[in-house]
Figure 1 (cartoon, rainbow, N blue to C red):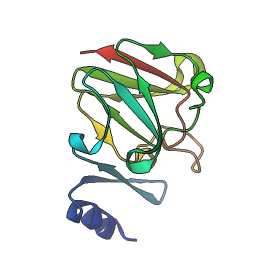
Figure 2 (figure 1 turned 60 degrees about the horizontal axis):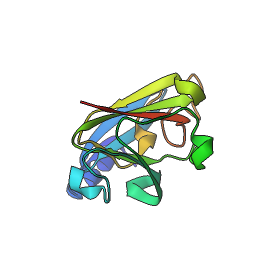
Figure 3 (figure 1 turned 135 degrees about the vertical axis):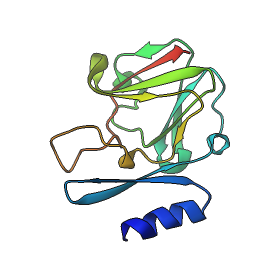
Figure 4 (figure 1 turned 30 degrees about the vertical axis):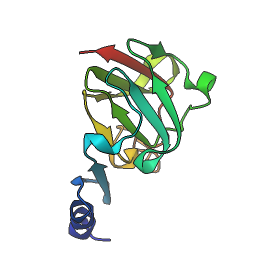
Length: 140
């Protein structure tokens, strides 16, 4: 699917879309309106196993940090996320808050992390989909 077709499809469905081009490949990050993410309160940072807020949900409570998502059976399993209106969320590529970091501002939703680059040298794993291994939730 061409870049303009992918962006056109996303916008025709009511989503904001951003095309990201790198290493000859196209990724489209689709950011949905905040109300699209179910069950994520104002003080929560919510991770979802599947794109578009599907599958299992892991809700990171206010001012909480988890150094190893293996403990919660969510290591390398996050495909979409949402932040409450009063918190910042931080994803880390490796356990113990190491590796690349994705900072997510308050009241944000990302329907599919595949469109968000993580800076990896590996072209097969250079996005945030199924890449988070530790997480923090902090207040604004």
